[in-house]
Amino acid sequence: MATAAAQPKIDPATHVDVLIAGAGISGIGSAYHLQQQCPGKSYIILEMKDTFGGTWETHKYPGVRSDSDLYTFGYRFKPWVGPPIASGEAILEYMGGVIEENHIGEHIRYGHRITRCSWSSGNNLWTVEATRRSDGARLTFTCNFLWMCQGYYDHEKPYIPDWAGIGRYKGRFIHAQQWDPGIDYTGKRILVIGSGATAATVIPAFAGKAAHVTMLQRSPTYFYCAENRNELADRLREVGIDEPTIHRVVRAQILHDQQVLTRRCLEEPETVFEELKALVRQYAGEDFQFEPHFTPKYRVWQQRLAFCPEGDIFKAAAQGKVSVVTDTIDTFTEKGVRTSSGQEIEADIIVAATGFRLSVMGDIPFEVDGKPLDWHETITYRGMMFTGVPNLLWVFGYFRASWTLRVDIVGDFVCKLLNHMDAIGAKRVEVALREEDRDMKILPWIEQDNFSPGYLMRGLDELPRRGDKPEWRHNQDYWIEREDIPATDIDGPEFLYGG
Ligand SMILES: Cc1cc2nc3c(=O)[nH]c(=O)nc-3n(C[C@H](O)[C@H](O)[C@H](O)COP(=O)(O)OP(=O)(O)OC[C@H]3O[C@@H](n4cnc5c(N)ncnc54)[C@H](O)[C@@H]3O)c2cc1C
Image (cartoon, rainbow, N blue to C red; front, side):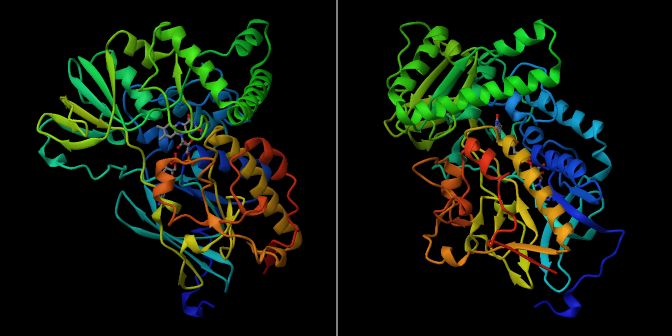
């Protein structure tokens, strides 16, 4: 138990019912749900940056855009009215609209970095320490419930592999996450290392002005080429249907189509791959070669499909503006990179699109009753709550479906939980394994044969663990969760209430 001296007093000036960490798309959506469904609750959002947006504010490389459609990446409550794939700027504008229309801005404390969170069972409160960027002041807040919306990767330090000879390179080296929009790449030879969604976005954007772009990939990725328009949405608009209805209907249609695609990827991956190739050929020509650079080794859908609006990267490749090398890096040289098979690739600018550094709970030190918390020792309840950690929830979205779909589902769940706690007079809720779970197999967070992005695989030791029952794992299947999570019996034996 915490000592009396360690227990914070409640100061109404710095105490809220709910504290939301982060003003990205998860934090803003969560605030909306809290306001709507628990109108009596006081709350603040602490955000370390000077503005909202998270991912969409951090990434400033040319062409930055979603790879999900915004009918499902947008919230269920605010209609999306633009083309399905949206620029980072359009997503920020959409989020800005949600903040303004719902007066969320007055609850956000920008420039506040959370540096420590400590739970005390003595008074059932979290104490949240934060540093204010403007003057370096160290502030302390208390809250009853902590809603973690801080994302899953380090916004300041991207993942850069430990490449040999990197210090020798005389050109400009930059990670895509740290791209400075002031960099002039007109007429430059650019080498992009990586093949995921970021590479697929940045390469066609560079190709417009650069002398040439080379994509160096360790292994190929699946691409999905399509026009950046939704036929159903266009048709409904044409006949005068209102935007909220269009949003609801088009969202339902896209989710249905994705569910069918996901099932087909599992049942008939070769056929799906042939269809993806046919889409590429529409843009790159019938004689486009898929071997060796566009034939992945993993099963389709095991990692997110990289979306190419209008087949842009393939068009650029067919026009000779982009070339692809599939190889590993032996060493950086003064002029570029030498691959393991001995190919020299010269470049004026090298852009690493090598992904993220996982950051579990924002790398914030946590304590429960004076004891440091090791997340790896906890077991997750549906990828949102954790054994031994009261009154806390983490919003971790989907990878195959849009992340934000889960923000809405989890938002409903938290609000139901908070209202239930009020109804029964509980000050504390915690999840715990039931008697029947005692012999359950405890496994790593990620189900590797199902989904295996590099940044999660590198960070498995830091992530919480899971069991092999639906309640104790983060199910990446939106279509199951949209039924299961609302149907949760929050009076079930896995929920322990107190206070
Ligand atoms: C370039 C890119 C494109 C993507 N495209 C898609 C897509 O099309 N579809 C999709 O589903 N997913 C996509 N993703 C995944 C994407 O990250 C999520 O969909 C989503 O934007 C994450 O939102 P979030 O609010 O949970 O986290 P973030 O966007 O990471 O925001 C977290 C916020 O918390 C703040 N924060 C973190 N630590 C602290 C702290 N200690 N104190 C205070 N504040 C803190 C951060 O500053 C940030 O503002 C993409 C990711 C990237 C990088």
